[in-house]
Image (cartoon, rainbow, N blue to C red; front, side, top):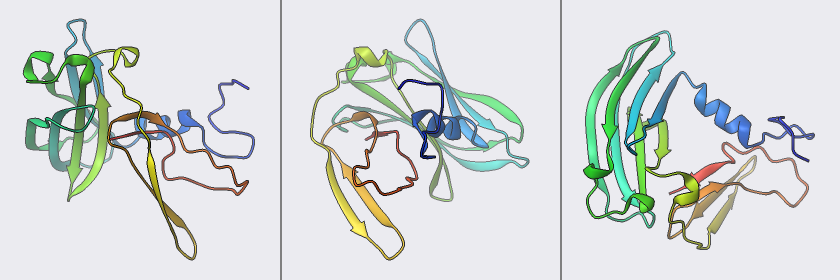
Length: 178
């Protein structure tokens, strides 16, 4: 059944709820796609304090190869402020077709990714996505389990389906696998 609900009838989060959590985080990254296929990148800080960290922008292809660092700098995200950090243009990227390019934008604080955004120069329907298997590794612990997923190529909009009937709460269950 299609609905505008972000939580299903058992209380589990749907994809929309995970995206809301990301969009409404105290520190977030937003992008604006322009008509010339360039991408304006913004760092937003709604926290009641300044946050100092490392701003990183990389471009890579769908197989995770040809990684190119476009920006890496230490910045301070001012409290209650949004600031334009950079514009990424297709011409900045060498050796990767625009429908095969992934723009990975991160804000890293004390070695931990505090905010992350994946962007593209083209609409998702125009991406050169390849079908490849997703491998999984499960580790069980006394009170929880860890699920590690990997793939030889980029996977867009991955969602995990629980089929055992158990109530499972995921830290994230609608994500891009890079």
